[in-house]
Amino acid sequence: MESYGNIKVLGDGVVPEGIYNNIKIAGSCNIIGNIDVNLLKITGSCNSDENIKSKDIRVYGEFNNKGEVFCNNLFLVNGASSILKGDFKGLVKVRGELNIKEDSSFENIEVLGKLKTLGNFEGNSFYGYGKVMVEGLLSADKVEISIYDDSEIKEIGGENISIKNSTRKKFFGILLNEMEKGYVRCNLIEGDNIHLENTICDIVRGDNITIGKGCTIGTIEYSNKLIIDKENIVRNKVCTKN
Image (cartoon, rainbow, N blue to C red):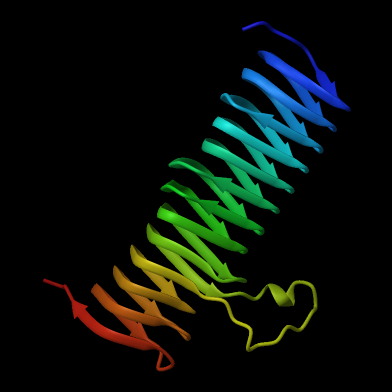
């Protein structure tokens, strides 16, 4: 690939295949071919059909990519982004909306906006404070979801899994209606240590399980410790300890 320096698109423009230092898009841009770039910053709109490799990607506008995104440091979405698949080695921050069509991997992710994935999503640490829709498996060593809106995740797997009612209303000093509660809906949650609130799930399986308020669970399979709050529905409990 040919090597370029910095490029800035203010109106309508095209970025050809190549290696870049910084690409800044404030207008409307099409990326033609694969690119390798240190910083891709989008405050306008950008469309790409091929793969993008970058240290930092910052989306304040709209970014649509039909190829794979490789990001080593920071992938920030303050606007809207739709990609085919992603390999995120650093931190993903979703303040706006991120849609991913195929199986993807991450190191660390924070969701305060909306995340939707059609495939599996696997990584190290997942922090969800917004709306999360995963049609496959969400797998991470640590999964923390603070419920702020209804979310649907087909399966959750990890070592430490925590789903709790949101306390974000306290951050801004705004009192919200306590009756307006969101829920997380799952087919299966499986992990070592699990704490659930406001969760509707068919099967919960783990070593140490705590079922807090607002849960409806089909079957719990536990091997060590089980704590269940009175204000929920649990249809079956199975101890698998040898």
